[in-house]
Length: 149
Image (cartoon, rainbow, N blue to C red):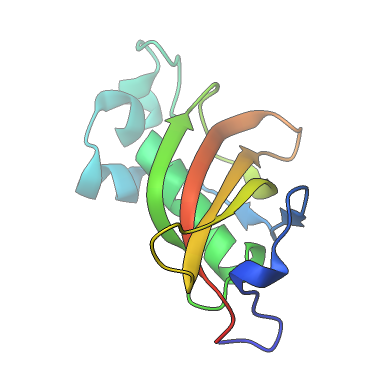
């Protein structure tokens, strides 16, 4: 737990957070895809050039994993961790080699639990963007958070 850790009581609708950046290279895209999503458009420039993407594109799950890492390490400093209750994901444009990604998050709802006053839910929308401001992933998540002990 860090000294700037936030509890449910500290979060308000309209709060915004921006993460540090993550530089994504072709080798990382291929390595992730080889292990988790071995489709031609993720496995190499040559195998990807005649696909829908017209070139190497990261798996959406790779983009989601990078997004999570950025949120955990430099984004939303929840005192007891980022615990997902539900999530909606969209990938409006493919993540490419050379993308420098960051996440911009806004809190859209904060609700104490009706059954347990020690916790509640935060709804947040966030975009994973590259260095040109292109949205690579759009997310709406409902997160479990705890009240200050």
